[in-house]
Length: 272
Image (cartoon, rainbow, N blue to C red; front, side, top):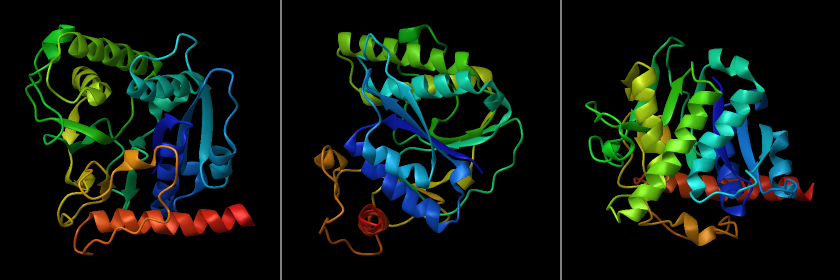
């Protein structure tokens, strides 16, 4: 299975990638099956920190648009668009789309067919609430998002998601609408996927979200809660020496342990 995620070349995301790698290395995933798409500021070379991860993952670098970016999270579909543009054969390849702030407990058992398989995301994404802002029909299915497995997208698909996510973000800001504006790119990805693909919510993509005990059968972990651990507290520094203590029965314990392990692994490698 090929794993892919996209993020800027910034300290916040690099330590997250190191933590994600802890779980992928543990599962024996080959470097050739891990794709990190990385956004570079215009005219700025890749950092030594992100380049040090080339030992563990296939990393692709793309410069930011010259006009900059009003909505930072829209860089994700932009990076996918650039990658699919460079490698149009990706349209026929299956990828598991994940995020940098995650762990993979086990490789999901999903068929390589024409469906797109998704995590259930009703706790975080809403349907039938904001579609009208872009003239889209209301979604009638359960919300899906964050993590998916499928093929069939092309560069135009991703550029459309990027454009619509920015449009939605601007309109939500202008109208002062309630709701999480950071996930506009996930909303527009869901809407575009709903128009183009047959989408299936799969128990194989059940995930722990950083709250409460572990869910039975979860294959993924996504750090979406800030109750115990706040990612943004480590925007410029690494949390590898973190001393937060948590009962091991809670799922966030897994992420804190992976952070500490990442600190050990990558500190040793940087010194060797």
